[in-house]
Image (cartoon, rainbow, N blue to C red; front, side, top):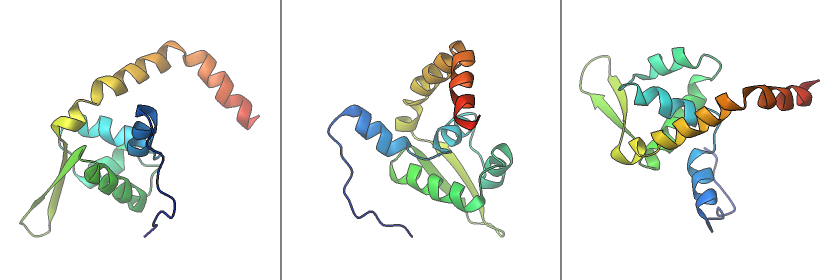
Length: 118
């Protein structure tokens, strides 16, 4: 597994949030888990563009940052569910605010992003 060689810069709140939320699918994972405790296969169906491996890595990182918890049920085959911690739930209004801002600036954001691929 990848091991960092350089320690992260944690001098301000933006550095901290970047360290916790850096990852293509983390915000979506948090949002979908907020909708209810979900199993890995359900998350995979909601984010079909992500590989199972990448989702597992990012779920593990979210768990290490104490934003989600993983519950393993002692059944065969093993059943796993993820849910938000109270700490993770406190992040949802922030994500909702970012989503609202993106919705309000939809046209400009799409144009700027489209320019990169034109």
